[in-house]
Length: 212
View 1: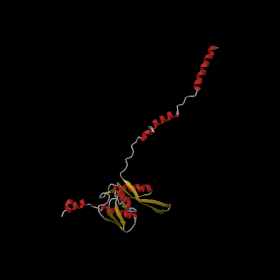
View 2: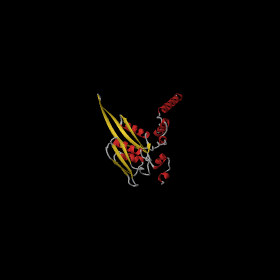
View 3: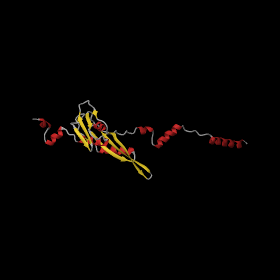
View 4: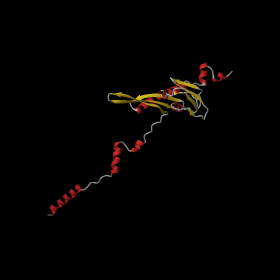
């Protein structure tokens, strides 16, 4: 009888071990393991190098929406004019069209950077008085003493501020169209010259121009 009872007790012990609840690993360990498998911890993302800031600053001068009526309803299209500059003598103008407003602004900015021009300045102002012209617009620009500020309004002010001009006097003489005013301003700025340019054209030095 004792020999028959011994294997029964052994079977009970084996069955009790199989039915015993298994210990679970803490949740934190599983998450760490999953993070390591999926491509690293969040710290790796924070250690990524930041994007290099661009030297160009932008300002939207004009935004317009065009509507086209079709059989299914209305279709909208946007156009934008953007001015970019580095406030160190470079400024550009761009015009973009797209079905979405953000895309139109991006296109205009890319064109403005590609069309950026180097403008001749004299300190914080322009070298001399100039009249910019474009179609029916006329913009008069005069140099000013230090501390005057940018005396300009409308769409002319962003162009001068992004160019890096801090002291100037301006006056719009005819049409107030903002797009044409910007183009008239660019027309005047691109025709600025300094004394070194005049001396080079005449084949003389600056001192020879002022000598009697």
